[in-house]
Image (cartoon, rainbow, N blue to C red; front, top):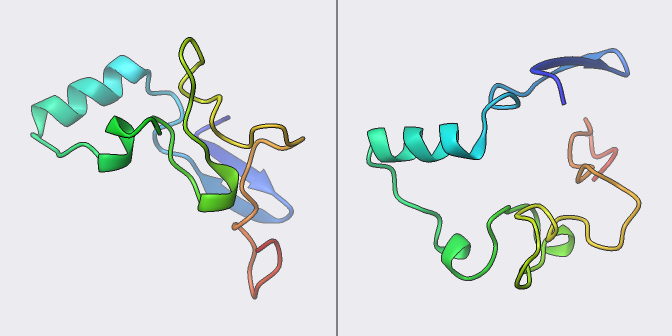
Length: 84
């Protein structure tokens, strides 16, 4: 993922795309931000309900997203209901 993408005539901005897990953790600690309660419940990568599951022991933090699906994005990026 790039920080700025042109997709189907629209720009997508992904400002944290080049941040590592360590960068994110340091930012959260530095700014004393609360952790999302689902992280402690086994959801280290949180998306919408149908596209997200808890991860199991030994799985990557992203393995709970789009599990068993041939996709890597949720699809809620549409305009006027398309893609939702």
